[in-house]
Image 1 (cartoon, rainbow, N blue to C red):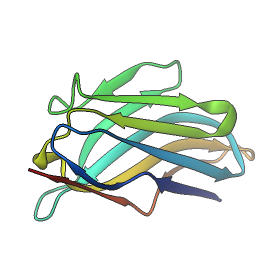
Image 2 (image 1 turned 90 degrees about the vertical axis):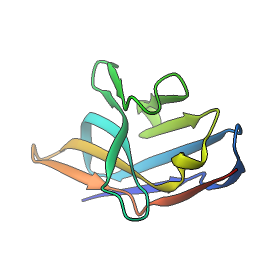
Image 3 (image 1 turned 90 degrees about the horizontal axis):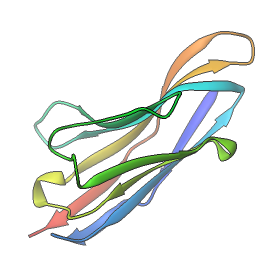
Length: 120
């Protein structure tokens, strides 16, 4: 099995920055994708950013130009650098990974979530 552990959330003023980290552990052969999602109170979960095998990236329109996703596959770790944060970025952020395991099975895994609160 695979476990994802996030860190880096917190409280920040509008215009500030935070970097989230996600570390994956387990019987991983390779990653198909690594991503970040968020869910604000009363809203549906949304994709924030994803980085695919091959390093292509995709961002939500609401964060383009402000957030940057990156990875360190040697450490099974990926990051979300969030700049120019806005109150509407307040949400619980979840990391996600689509992986192939050593036995050839594939799976989709989630972290436990980390709260990001942006004050105005």
